[in-house]
Image 1 (cartoon, helix red, strand yellow):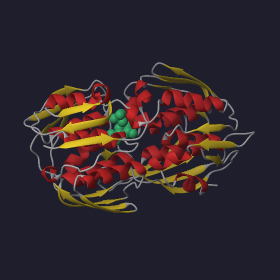
Image 2 (cartoon, protein in one colour):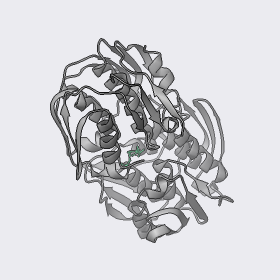
Image 3 (tube, protein in one colour):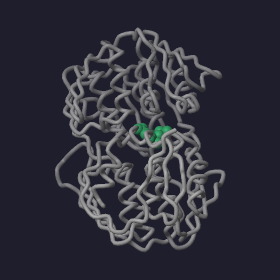
Image 4 (spheres, helix red, strand yellow):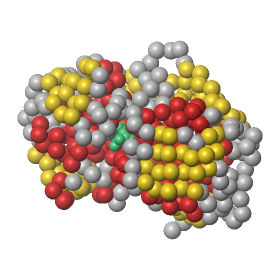
Length: 429
Ligand code: S3P
């Protein structure tokens, strides 16, 4: 396996970065554009591997999609215009693609089969197949429908009232996308609020959705109309530079056009509570998804507790928060985050294992981790385990490492969400 040599022992990261488009919003823009009527254009689309998997799946469903870099044009066919695929739908590494697309295909009167990579094959799917089957879809998969390969024959759905057993935007979105095609009303009840990009996009594409507290409802039989989507930068990608700017001595980084949807900004709350010097400059322009610039400077950090409703608002940022905690005075406790075990990797295990190699004082718990800071990090050969966010976190960790050189095994995984990551990082040196 090829290992990439990482930059280490850095001081002073300086510069301005335009982080790539938001992954969650890019997926949804392609999906909504496909099931709407008319031509949808998407700007600042994320051309990462996950979102390209979504495009490839919709092409197999008969949708004409042109993508050139971060511009995408979709000739929408409506839900009814999707065609039975001749081939297996391969979602690659993308949990969002498989779970949301199952919701869409649950409503279509044809057969489709899903597969993905080694990581997808380990990720739980009954969280979506159970409610979709309750609505009337016929679904089967390996180990009683828990894992890929999964096949689905849809159509004839009825609305349900469904309390979500886990706080998951993917599950919520899957049920809402099925609900748009079902008879009657579909309601999901969230245990904690999760990212609301799907709800915002239903409205952007001319549909209606209502939210009351943690209950979200859609009426079936809705028709969606094409839209122009401007995707803001991904705060989950920005997070690696927010962390690098806060912990590498003598740094100041400006991040442009970062998405500031309040269901995603938990990382900013956590950084502020840790004492990071960050300035958020929201844009005034009206957009379905708010955005702004963020400036971060090197800061003295302190340990905090992260739990409860904050967890879904920063779930993807926990690996990089663990690194921040190694550079914060005192103890950081992360709890209520058992969902980390079923991400692209078991992120409790992979974070603890890889940061320990670099000298961090970090322990796994049942539903999170405990980190004692501040520790100096040492160079080591580490692995992404095929998980993009673990890979980027380790590349930032290496910036502080002393001693031996650091190497990252399986660094190509980073292309899942941030193909230009190393280029952007090096532009700050
Ligand atoms: C996502 C929801 C989250 C997140 C994932 C993207 C989405 O997953 O971790 O990276 O786009 O809806 P869960 O819904 O499993 O929490």
